[in-house]
Image (cartoon, rainbow, N blue to C red; front, side, top):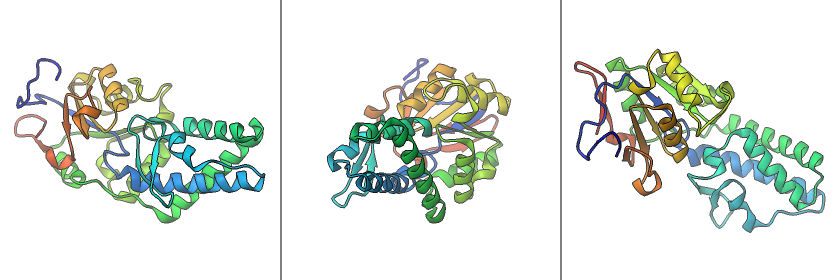
Length: 262
């Protein structure tokens, strides 16, 4: 708890805006990025095989921080890992390094990885595996009714984020969508949060940030927001002021002022 908060206290006071992370907060992370990861790595393994090289199956979880089932499908992810917190450029660099370590030249590794990620993007566009997490629709509807400005701050690229929000049919709820390409520094630095607050016309100290990783919480803390709400187990989000297992546990109200509470 921060700012003298105790369990059971009103956690918001006079908050005037809500900033949401996207993946793992609004949409099901594994459904979306598990599909993308499996496709990218399948193409990557095929490219290595064509050159007489291989990627050991046991190495896959450590590449981007994922968990695979017995058939090699991504079923979970490390909330502290690159897939959860990294930018696309960082994921690209990590996979290129794997290619180099497997025996490719650095130049060849970069070309192959770029092709693999492009193929994964194309398949994601065809499948569109975006799925809203429980409680998201009700919270957004209530926030709109309460007149609370809302924004998305994401490690994804802005165009990609907008596309995913359109797939889910929730893009019109947000007055601003700020991707990592719009700021000099992404999460865990405060830049995305500060830019979103500026676009909403709200001071950071009157905003709430809701996210599912410590990167979200660190960004929010650095920006000086009023409250940091983490989605997940409290032990995995030690920097959060409050944690919930689902957005279904939150509601928005605005009898006299903006509120989000449990």
